[in-house]
Length: 480
Ligand code: PLP
Image 1: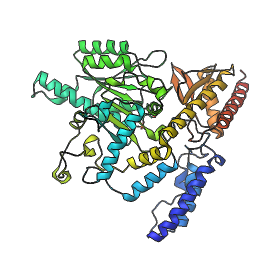
Image 2 (image 1 turned 90 degrees about the vertical axis):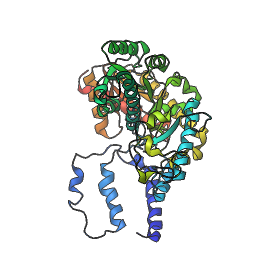
Image 3 (image 1 turned 135 degrees about the horizontal axis):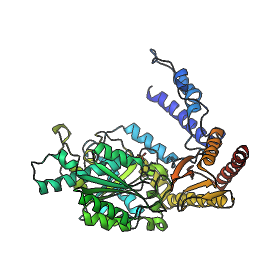
Image 4 (image 1 turned 180 degrees about the horizontal axis):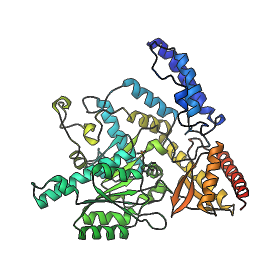
């Protein structure tokens, strides 16, 4: 494809994208297919001869779109939002076209510097303490874009692990094997933390103690203190605590104000996973939910969830960048450059070497909407979640199961888990709405998340009418 054809195809693609997103509600939100459906539609072997672009695009509709769960659909209320907006798509396109690889400042100066500046912008927008910003006098902190929250948490766990191993080497002597010290380390999180914390501990080869939160699904200081003291009596060293602001199941917020001082006292690295919840902190009225963040060593949030930025764009900040990089630096000659001492080389801040120009889409989105436009978008989603909560509360067959503070409502029929499972299966099978379940206080609940970028009151009303009608059908069928 030459430049001339790319112009033509590019314009067609923009038209296709706009038509897809503008008319997405004409499609089923979930596909009506079985696993393996695509095997029957795509040839077993790659084409020997070039194919026309028209033929490829023809197959997009016939083969790909019929197998899509449409995350941007107004009837999609599952998981958390998948950020999307036209400015973000354009930023992505430009990043792809520039096609640089930003592993060092020298390899991609603007890519590196825009990333640093965007992380400072975002840090200020969500009210992070100045220590986390790069461009503050005397600061040794800073931020970086990773591909996902799971990666952020793993990186921070590895940094905390390196920090504690170093301390233990001072205590036990340099000759002690690191692997034997590893067996003495203990990490902590709540039962409500995302499973990626467990995965990080698995990869990091460290023990993880999963703690019971309180009845509001929030991890409390006393629970952590008791666990740490018990472990220390058994010769273990608490080294890492992963807390969550906006848990996956029911959007609960751990109590950082209580947990922070305990991490300080016992010398453990406090990480804050605000993957979804962190986005609402761009509105000052929600920042009370992050009180205690001043104790954190690291923090992550995903604009690619709830700030109109397309995947992937997961932000991570550390209070001390040298503690992070000491766990991750390997520095062969061929990657060094004459500014290695004075510039940021993001390859030392994470696992991958190659990095895309992801800050462009963040820059495009923040400038196009402005902070006030993004705040308006978040507030609207929170208002719509409250509207849905009111619908649930108005029907005595149902109960609301979480403290609805932002964009997620957990609810259930006041019946057994089995009845609720049947209701959710019926709704999802209908293709009219898509939601997923969670377990809250050991009960099966249905999660309703406001996800579509342009969600409206009518969408919420439609969702509620569908749920209420399906509930009537399910209860009748089960003769309840
Ligand atoms: N943390 C929380 C609180 C989440 O809800 C999720 C996913 O939804 C994750 C971490 C993992 O996110 P990612 O897909 O960016 O790794």
